Every structure is written in C-alpha cells, then in structure tokens.
Length: 377
Image 1 (spheres, rainbow, N blue to C red):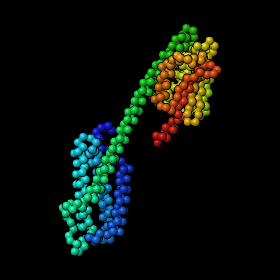
Image 2 (cartoon, helix red, strand yellow):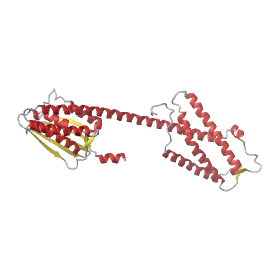
Image 3 (tube, one colour):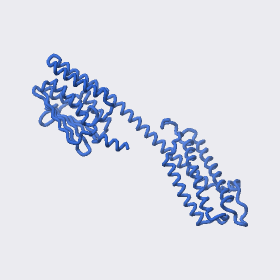
Image 4 (cartoon, rainbow, N blue to C red):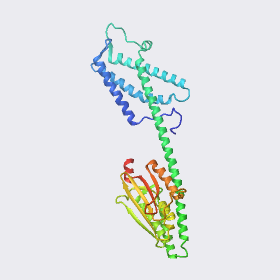
C-alpha cells in the first residue's frame, strides 16, 4: 500500500522500537519498586518481602505488552482524517476502558495476591467502588499518554513515508529523463559517424573499411554494455579512443590528439559518453574549419574533491559578441545529463583560449565505485 494512502494506515513497529518500549518500562519498574520499598502503604501489609518489587515488575510488563497494541489503536484512530469528533471520542473512551481494566487488575493483584489489609481498615475496595472514586485516573493518564505517543509516532512515520515516496518518485523521474537523454545521444552519435564514413567511400576505401570496423566495435560496446549512467574514466577513454580513430581516418592524418590523464583517475566515475560530445563539438566547430592540421588536447585531473575534464582545440575562437556558438544536441544533452546527475555540484563551460581555439571543461564530484559500495554498506 502506498505511503500516500489514507492517514489511518498502520505502520508496523520495528525491532528497535520494541527494544525502546522494553527499556522504557524497565526504567519505570525500577522507579516503582524503589517507591514501594521507600514509601510503604499504610492500608496494606505485603505477604512477603519481595511483594512490592514483584508487583512493580508485573505492572511494567503489563504496560509494556499494552503499549504496542495502543500504538496500533492510535494509528487506526488517527484524528487527521474524516469524522474527527468520533475518533477523538473513541480515543477517550478507549483510554477510560483500558485505564479501568488495568486498575482493576492491579487492585486484584494488590489485595488478593501480594498484600493483605491492615486489621481495622476495612475490606479492600471492589471494582465499582474504585471506579466511583476515580481511582483509575492514574491508569487513565498513563493510557492517554501512550495513545498520544502512538499518535505522534504515527504522524512521524507517515510523513517519513511520504518523504520517502516523494524521493523515490523523484529518482524514478530522474532515471526516466536520463534514459531519454541517453536514447537521444546514441542515434545522434551513429548518424554523425555514418556521415563521416560516407564522405570517404570513394577517396579512401581502405580507410572506410577501418572506420566501419571501428564503428562496429563502438556499436557493440554501446548496445551490449549496461545502462549505467556512470562508468570508470578508463572505460570512457577506451570508447573515446575508438571514436578518435574514426576521426583520424576521416581527416587523413590532419588531426592530432594529445591525452593528459592524471595518475590514479582511471577508476573515477564519470557520466557515460561525457567526453565524446565535447570532442565532436571541438572537431565540428574547431579543427574541421582549419586549412592546416587540427590538434586536440584531452585532459583529466583532480582538484580536491572535484574531477576536471577538458577538451581543447586549436580551431577558430568563437566571437565574444552575440550570437554565441549554437549548442548541438550532443552538447545540450550532456549539459542536461550533468544537471540531472549532480545538480549544483557540476559545471560545463565553453571558453576561448588565449592562444586560439576553444576549451570545454566539465567539473563534477570525484567518486569511485568503491566509494558507492562503502556508502551502500
């Protein structure tokens, strides 16, 4: 049943709550025992020395057994749903009934099992007499306090369940959005690569065969791989190397690539296919517009708790004045995926380089698969 169902839904007690109930009433058993030993009643005489302690222990056990039942009743009769007046009346009536029954039980144990009246004090009071004199008020107050605690617990657990449900729904929505973004990226990558292959069919048949072989490897990796949103950086670089091999063939030796990957970053988790759109953007709007050879620099380094990924090209610098360079689906998609995965803890920027060309930089939190397993445990 959903946590957003009617307010009188019952939330079962957990093991820790049973332990807390037992400890709570054990503490009161000690207090009641000390009070009975230090302040003996003048109307009764214990039949044996340990009678006050045993009676206190029995009282604590009775209340410990009743507490979970009263919590259930409080959850069923929560007053934030319909018929509030009737529910309040039912809670009060329940407190009176339980208080009277418990007082009757304790009276019987006291006068018939553990104590005897002092001579000349008269017979012990019966249930009707105890009720007419409101001797059950103490037990009524305890019952009302337990019901109040049960109501507070019910409201707390309900709000906790609602927050959990909201978080679960939000996570499902984020997963759906990420899956949609990923489904857009895969065909976009495929179409652009096929376009590069078609451009060399007549000029370089051998290169086309090499490109097709590399493309098949990339497609196999994409289709047979898992749907994880994050992969180790080493796997991302392996996929990127296959894409760059296709681009090297396309530009017939007019594209050089330099990798600057800091030691120890191979296991850092990064979004799947985060670098390929940046490289594609650098080639399409940068090196492809040059008459001379193009150069790319792909770097990854760690700055404290942040991983910095960057792609630099030596192409023409984008003008600072509007209109800015339009972001294609790959770059726009990457920006949205980063926002979905990391919220405000990420940043994707495009900026001109002083020596010419553009620099795309991604900043995201550093974490590894081992970190995630530790958090899960």
